[in-house]
Length: 338
Image 1 (cartoon, rainbow, N blue to C red):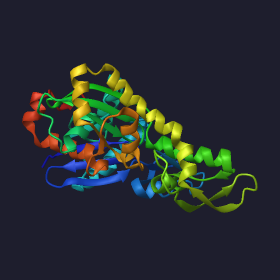
Image 2: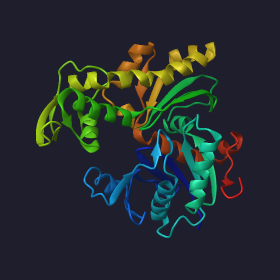
Image 3: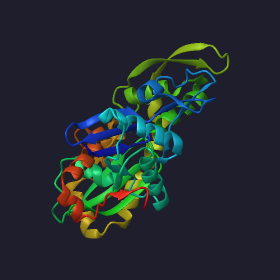
Image 4: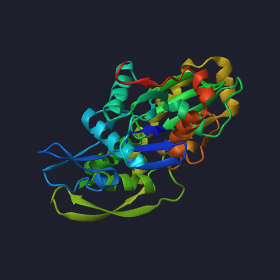
């Protein structure tokens, strides 16, 4: 039996939804390849755990970067693997609705549709990640009243003003929470002569990084390599250090919000002052990001419930509402003919 499957194809994680099972799974968007055979040897969490620990014969690939396909073949393999797990029998020409950045070019959209088609999908429909985040936030958008949604993903920040169930204005910048992780790696190398891997830096980000300085600094012990002696090292790092290490990057996250405000009609801008800014995505979990944006814009800012899953939940809500799909022009198309 054919299914309708919703997918949030993110730079850091791929999430899937079916009407019968709701959110089916969430897994890292990572593929481990055999460099000689060019065949995948691991996917998802298993591949992520290999990061920085593989021999030269194994290559770790992140198929998506900045919200768009970076390695086409790896993307196809990843989609085929994960969607095949849903039925246990492959994708079987199922209908797919996938969330993509709102400012994705037509060429980039076609690459996504082709990837799903080559992975075995039937008809494909794309929905703006910003719209999906809004649909998954649980906030009513049917009235002629603007609300701003900011989806902070691993590779991009999508901001949109939504009114009457549709997007009025949107903007996307290609920077996200993965760039915060990269900045921590660079900081430790530059300021402390310490080399750390991606997994260690990402753990530091999740535990002590912040968009605002904490009243009382917190610290953790991490492990890495002395960049001078090339020997193993255990070191202490504080939240205050990391705050300054990522400050410029966090400041850049505001660019998407400022760009949207600059082109939003006055009446909708006035609405946002009352309705506020709603944050979604994994990056919304960065300590103090809501406080930082509220102070910077003067607009009340809140984090949506279960922010990481807002996009995939919104895709699921759209899939279940055929009236909404027809009204807003969402059409499932064959990737082979369009």
